[in-house]
Image (cartoon, rainbow, N blue to C red; front, top):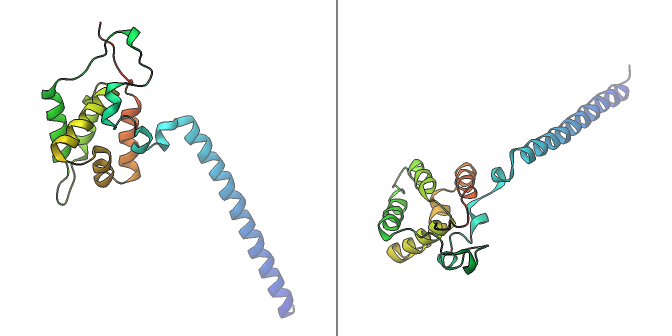
Length: 160
């Protein structure tokens, strides 16, 4: 067998192998996208998806609210101060207490409370809550977990 024939055979084998790997990669990507779609949108969300909720002005006129519905529930200053201070204190020098953030976000009953806490946080600590959380909770896993918690919050709650 000539040297050129051996090179051609080796090139053909490499070309077939590369083609196989490319096809498998495309198939896996398609399967991953189908699974991600079935899991739901929260898996691809980040906190910036809920930027309106972190705006202190949101609490004054929540999305979908009209005056004819009656008053909606607001949280008292005691809870807002406690939540704002706890969110500020979670960031440590070397290690952040992510569980504390998840716990506080779970404790917030609705998007109006998120907005009120963001306003209280900004007044007390002179920094934007969303920027603060993005700074310290910067991995995709942390972002998606916080976004999943907030995505379950109703925009507001009506008082009886």
